[in-house]
Image 1 (cartoon, rainbow, N blue to C red):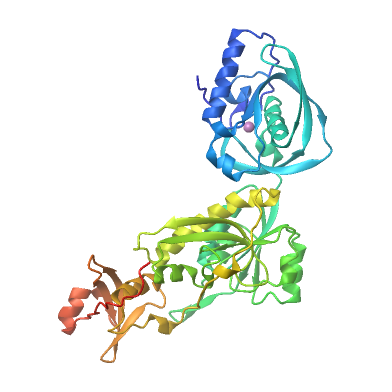
Image 2: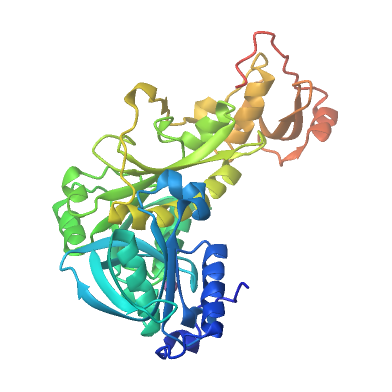
Length: 456
Ligand code: CO
């Protein structure tokens, strides 16, 4: 029978467990149920207090045939046999310790870097009361220490060691990362390094740096920089004594000297499947090229732009209707969660960064105002992509007898004809295409070409 797992917070998880005295039928039943519950929950270990029973019993197992393909394929973890121990004592710990990412069935979705002795000797009784001694190493040793903790009211969260982190960010793509880093207790965000960004709105100079605004709202230290090649700025960053840097949507080049301040380097979220689309407009390039997939890459930065080794990647299928703001928002959330999921495994070495394949590198350009101009012989499919990619900036426009008409929204029908939905003639408000046709007595017709651009 599967039992209900108690999740934190719950006072039962904080009560020291009582020794097992009777090795009777009800104990056998309880152990069988614990094993079933552990397997059903895809866990590798379970302690009796987690199912609401304050007894000194732990079970653990890593069987690749039960825990599934995903573990077998990706993991360097050695399987270990089904083990049930009552009244365990750890009699020896190795001096050597190692770090690994740990989860807990009582903390769903939580993964922490935990440092523990690499090998242990554990003594106790088996399910029939016979004395057992187990020498365990690696994951086996770790799991038993974790479960042993549960019997002594110690929880995963008690092992939390904060990772001192600095975020380098300027644009809105970084807002989710800032929010997640600030919320996750595992990170101690020591400062946000950002650039000064101002825009003139209705004659007033306005601070448009949303990263800075959010960082201040969270009460974080903000360092504003025009360049990072400045001795004072360098010293400020160095004095933060952070071990990890994260850089997202940041327009300044980070000099090697600053990268080296961070023991674990600086990690970046790049919204493309690298080495595809290195450069400053990967999301737009994905839409402009009609790609079937978009994605995010988590990389370790080096001195070359977007060229560092890859720590993790995630690919998403597109429906061909996405525009830049929507895809950017989606990828910013995806990138931020992938980043936070990945960092612990990177820090423990359970994920090793791998080099980008230089033979497959492609680049995307910095977008200029002029890129938004189209002509009557521009391919309709290309126009649709441009309208989606260049929203809100630079926008897509055509010169019509000296008047600039912006195409605000459009789509492609089944016959690959361009259907214009909304336009904005210069100096006028946005209007439906039909109102435009009626008012200006003219149509915008883009002919389909047979030697059409590739629609991969
Ligand atoms: Co646990």
